[in-house]
Length: 321
Image (tube, rainbow, N blue to C red):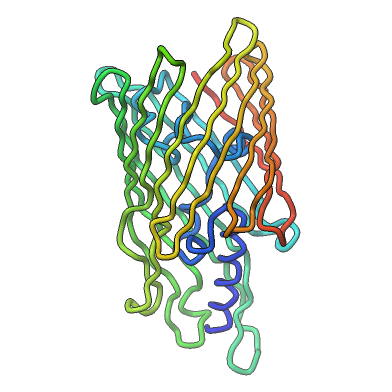
């Protein structure tokens, strides 16, 4: 079991670099809670707390659900470390809708696969293979506390299954579960064509796997963001946004994100951003594009990871109706 755990810890550190988190966050349990969904936000440098105007608000800022219109569904799939492992991936699906007189509700399901591993006994004999994974369903609700000010809460359950009992040397299942909550607010300033968002994520008890006395904290953090639309006509729109993130774990660090989007004729969007995460060794540009046709949107982004990993492609699709 110790060999497997060591391998999982190494992969967790790699995923910490992928997710753009500082070293303190790489020590957190349930890494799936830290992976930001949506290629649109990736293309904008992950500056999205004050934007979050789609179903991905369930993750980014549940307070933004107060302003959701109609129905929105979004889905993405990403191979996290394609240069190291083909079967390590993250998938995410979210849905949101407006509820007249109440605000907005949302649901999401995130799934992180650590891929297949080979179990061996003390002599190195193979005992079989197994797949390690995390799954995290989330329910969220947002409403306007006052005009132009939304407040929301997201409730999460996360299950981490590292190894089944019949594949470990001590016959102990390497699995754990816990719950968490996000609290977010979004304040719109229509006269300034801007918005301000604040969210506190992953508030909840630690997660343990085999030994309850050796638990890992969740990746608790706070994000503050601002978004401005300085130019908008019938033909084009320019959006700029910036976020700052602070890990609430010991030795946590600041992460800064900035980005912009140029949308032409509500059809084509070009995006660029920057992630500044010195402790996570990410200081680089992001870029992407989006295509929108009658509510169906396809987004692509190319994002950096830690300095020892190659850039990765992100794809997502959404439908607003």
